[in-house]
Length: 436
Image (cartoon, rainbow, N blue to C red; front, side, top):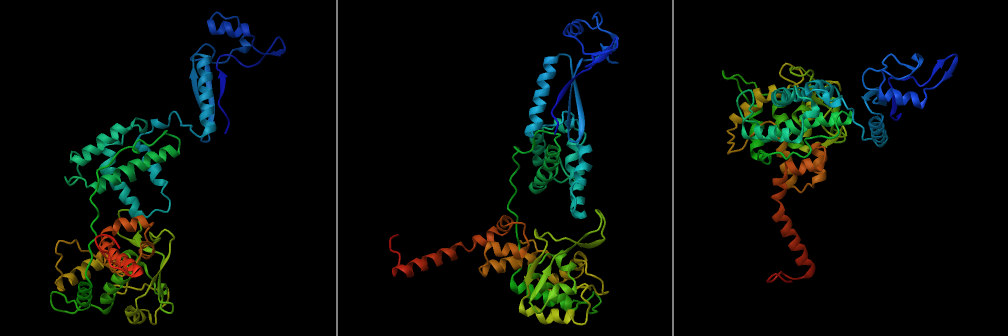
């Protein structure tokens, strides 16, 4: 990247005078500096801007464009050129006019930078920006958004001074999303584009969100819901439950698959010979704000995972896949179309829960709770964090630990007893008064 240089806006570097190419003399430059109106300078040396505006201009190239700044004194221009040259070479350069963009101007550029992101995620970002971020910072120059302004905004969100369009206070989780994933991400994008020197949200402490509750069903409840789903009846008493509905409840609870991943499965994804299901896609909204779904990439970091099929599911899956082409959807609606899990949850799963007489007992139970059920059973059976992370398709083990911390904590006494038994057996002694 080229370094900065200085240009004299009033005098040409060379000119032809009396048929000879020559350069301005030192005396000419001193006279121009003293008073351009009275300086004895041949017209050939004068530029079109002679005597107008600031004389010295610092020029430099960065981010594929040429930039300019003008100064009255040469010394000031030289200092600025040295500063720019150092910043450009060291990677600290920031566009002097980059901070002039408003956040509303940055938002569509930032959003367009999210290539490969699901439409539903873009929809979520847009809603959070319009509802939470834009009212406070939308028309603000990004260079004017400082740490204090962000802290004041967070305080208003946390106190309830700023509320949702429904008049409800924002949750701690929503505040974290607005600050870190929306505003902070936009400002970090501006830093990468060299519009800002740093992200002013980096030092802002956020209100601590309560640990996410992870409510699961018991094995007995899963069995009751599955049986009820297969035997559902309409309000008029007509049977509407199907064997596939029963299988679907058991499938989600015993594989830990996300509902969207389940709905995206094709017949070819089930490998009964190897006893695995290949998960490499999910159902996602085709367009933000619309309810048309298409197959898209799953959340699994590697894009694909293989889940073991519990033996008790094999007969049902074999019957479901027999005689079908590999590209057909595995789970279908009563009309034979690919299942839309949100509709299935409303029309089958929730009525089955009611028919099974499930008592929430303070729990928040949803279709997603079947996934939590699998995780709880796996932890109780001794699954380590890394194995569970891979089975659940989490980005890293930290997500697994944070989500299921309580379930892992419940095994501490069990671990302590096992350690005590191991040492006692190895030493041939029983601990007495704290000593072996």
